[in-house]
Image 1 (tube, helix red, strand yellow):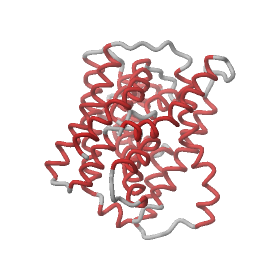
Image 2 (image 1 turned 90 degrees about the horizontal axis):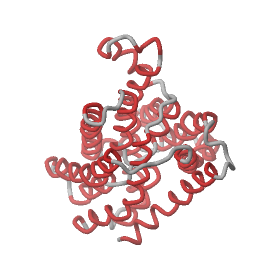
Image 3 (image 1 turned 90 degrees about the vertical axis):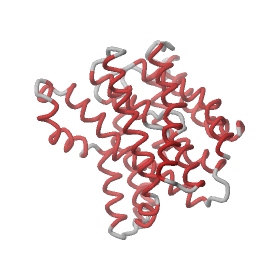
Length: 317
């Protein structure tokens, strides 16, 4: 079990560490990463999500509705709870609270999903595992990311800052849905639901851009983190406990309540039990908002994931 987790996280540590090293050693400028952030968040990642969702047949989405329900509920509830605690207990402003909430509630499906499920779900085909991971990535992008994007738009754009959130829900939601990280997976899902197949030439043409998404995002995260002094404080430890321990248990309870079969139940818990992802840090950088607690939580969650994931493997396998 431990070996499987190490195999999954080794590439993450290498690329994340390379970005951190380049920032610390001034091989790359860790203060001005706007261009790289635009490449990753507006082109590479949206392309990867668009390709993954369009390649997912509509029957796959329908057959995985219980999995979608578990993932979305586990992410929504944790996002809301974490945002509340960040505001009331840790005293964060709304923008930093939204980044913190997204960092904790959104697992790193893209980098860890396939290797972990391949090692844990016995008897599942490669296509079945890819389907589960593609759906989890779509759930995070479509159903969770807009919550944080709406808050960031409200708090960082002068035209929205003075108005009440209630009066801005519709325009902010529309603006969030136009963000490539949200819009492209939605388009891919729509094309799939209409029964179309992604042209082979288009798949081939977009492949280099999509392949750069994971590595580019991890390198950029390491570069961003290298510019700040990281501290393991109460907020970081709280975020780690919520993400690596509480959220998977909550997903397990939901899956039991829905009566999911054993294989799908295990897949849903393992997906939620993944270390936290990088969307929060990436979004924050794009809007000029940095939250050190989110960055610290990302690193602590990724490091200690090698210890927490085997716990869930032990009880579910």
